[in-house]
Length: 386
Image (tube, rainbow, N blue to C red; front, side, top):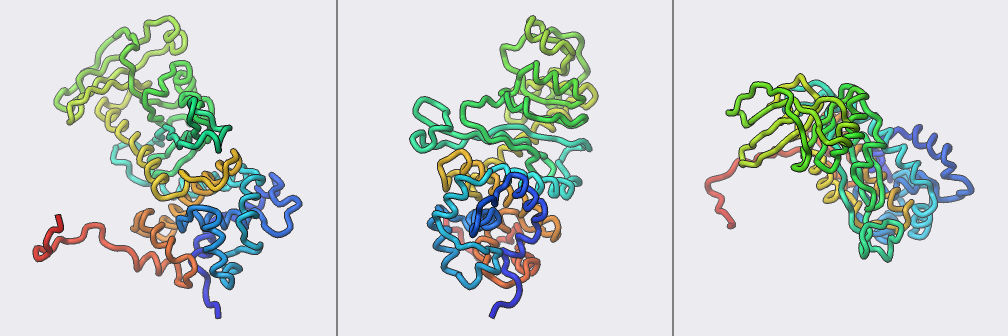
């Protein structure tokens, strides 16, 4: 006899299903659908992400192994590989994109007070992209190179909590700098970017919107120093001049002044930063740029712990659906972690949820009992294996 809610169903309770139903109605996702709804599709894909399924046949086999519990998972339609494949092929991916964005709007306020390690109260974003290689014969729409296909995930990450605020999925040929055209600038926010985004016309648009940017300068960019500000070389900041561009086209695209900070880090690397912020100290600017690495860690994390490198379908719609469902699960787990006030990492939560979807244990009890000390005291009686 069934007693209590399954762990998977408890996880799904944190999602805003009223928003999901509204999106399904908006994009007519369930039009002429009799058995396998958009909700069934999302739950199956979410189950695949949480339990590390490798294929649609794998998802079908695992769910059909527990027929008495499918209703309690929330599934109402018959689970089959062909039905799920058809749904991924035909159901509008914008349903799951909108749902992920609704989850992001819930998650970001929960992490708004997170410390970033720098004395800075404004919002800080890290912008970058990652490439997912594909087979050109199976994904001909995702052109990248002559004999290779790929998709790019252009991501704007809020460094407070590591929650993505913007994601754009494109083919491999879409240049990184073009992602700046898709952003809605937030006045007062800081945008951290690498040298791939050094386009003065687009950076000036950020400047005019009241936003601040911080990027690396290229070696062939010509400047004229107007005056220099005092620096403490003991901190690694070598010079902090106010400059203006000298090349005609660059000066036309960015007619205002810039700040060019030269910095030597502890490893002896020489870094040159460009920013339009004239008030923060040079050392704070350098410390802020360190936070850009968080978007790289985000890409590494989702590639290792979610299913976005092997796709269940080959169409553009199927790929985008799978990526947005993966983002939804990442953000949903982050919401649960904050709302239940847990200290366990997202990785630890995913590992626990991956092996307990059919259990009847209360979620708060399951995750609280699984919290272990991150640092285990070393016993002197324990021999080293290596």
